[in-house]
Image (cartoon, rainbow, N blue to C red):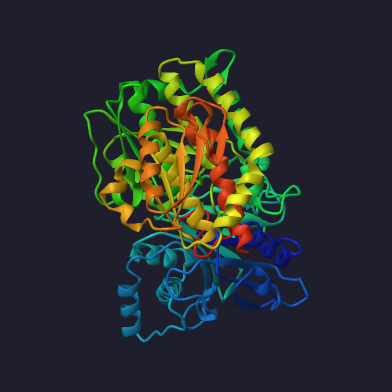
Length: 593
C-alpha cells in the first residue's frame, strides 16, 4: 500500500527519488521519508503528512550518490516521525524501507529486547532492520545476514537495505510484495511499481518471491535463498499504461469517469475482432471443462464478481463469489472440476496472492482479470484477461470496475458465441455519452442536496442490487457519508427500521424482471417519509423519477449507468471540500493483508 523508490548512480538523485514518491502518491500514504548518501554519510529526513512536508526539510544541494525513499500508510504505530521510513536499526548500522506486514514481529521484537536491543518506534519494519543488524554481526556476507533474517520473518515484505559500512550498494529482497528493478546506463533504480522507473529506463526486472538483489552503480545481481545467482529476466511495461496526467481535469476521478466509454470500446476491439471473439482458446476450453466457477476478489472487484457470477449462471455454469480475505482462511472448492477467477485492478492485492497459493497447491486452474500486465497475479495465474484501461490514479475505482464487468460480459458471451454483446455494449457507450453530456447537471443537483446528510441508502434488485453495492461503496469511500446498499426485498426484514422522514434513498429501476417489485419498495420508503431519487430506464419509468435514460439490456446495468453513481459520489465529495482522489485511510493498491 506504500510506495518505495531507491536509486544509485543517477544524476539529481534527490529529485528522482522525490519525483518517484510523487508518482506513487496515488496509492495512499500518511507520512514520507528519504535517506540520501553522499561521501561517507547517510542523511535521514522524515515527515508526517504530504511529500511537500518532507521537501521542506530537504537541503538544496543534490549531489547524492545513493538513496532510498518511502511513503508510509500506517499499519504498525501511528503516523509519526519516529515511525516514518526509512527506519534505522538499533545501532544505526542498517537503514531500510519496507512494504508489507511482518506477522510475527512481536515475537521477534521480544527476542531482540532480551538480547539487549531497543527500539525508537513502533513499527514491524524497525524489527526487521534490527534483526538484520543482529545477523550482520555473525555473517560478514551481507546476503547471508539478510537471508537469515528472511527465514525468521513470517508475513510479506519488499525491502531496500543500506548498510552503514557499505555505502556503494543497495540490497533488496521480497516476499509477497512487489519489487521492480530498473537497469540504466551507469545507474540503477528500484521501486515498488514501474511508474517511477519507466521514464528513465525500459529495462525492467521483477523480483520473484524469496529473491534478493545486489544493486551497484554498474551492476545488478540476483540471488535465490541459497545465494545461488539467477539469471535476470526482463519484463515489458507499456509506458502509455503508466501515464499519470490530468489532461486538464481538476481531479483524476473525474478524468477516469469520463474515460469509461473509451475503455469499454477498447475492450470490444481487443476481445472481438472481425466477427470473432479473441480470448485465449485454451482458457475458453478450461472454462468449458469446469463444473464450478469460483470468483475471489475484494472491495470493488468483489462487486464486479457478483455481476460476473450472474453472467456465468446465465450460461449454465454454477458460480459462487467469495471475499478474498475470508476465503484465504476458509478455502472451499465446490464441484469436481472447479476453476478460479480472481479480479484485481492492481494484480498485487495481498489477500488474493494469499489465495493464489492455496489455489496452486490444490492444482486448480486459475484466471486473473487485471489491469496490470506483469503483476504478481498476472504471472501466477494460468490465464489472464487484461483490461488495458490505462493507469487508474484515483483511489476510488471507476473505469477499472466497468472494465472488469465489460470483460466478464464479453467472456461469458464468448462461451455461447453470442455476438449481440457488441451491439449491447455499443448501446451502453451511447448512454454513457448521453449521461456525460446531458445528465451531469442533474446529478450535481442531487449531490448538492445530499452533501450534508449523515446517511444515504441505495436500493435495487437483481443486477440493480449488484450495482447498488458499488454505488454505495463509492459514496462512503470519498464523501465519508455512511452509506448502505439494500436488496429491495430485504427492506421489511430489518433495514426499513432505519428509514424516517428525510432519509435519502436512491433507487435503481433498470431491471425489467424486478421493476414491479421495486416500485412497491419505493412506496414503502416513501410512506416512512424518505426522500426518494429514482434512476430508471425509459420503458420502466414513472412520473417523478429523478433521472430517466434510454433502455438497454438489463445485464449491462453496471456498465450503462455506472457513471451516474460515480459522478454523484464525486460531486458530493467535491461540494464537501474533501480530497476526491485521496480519501483518508485508504490506499489504491492493498498490498498488505
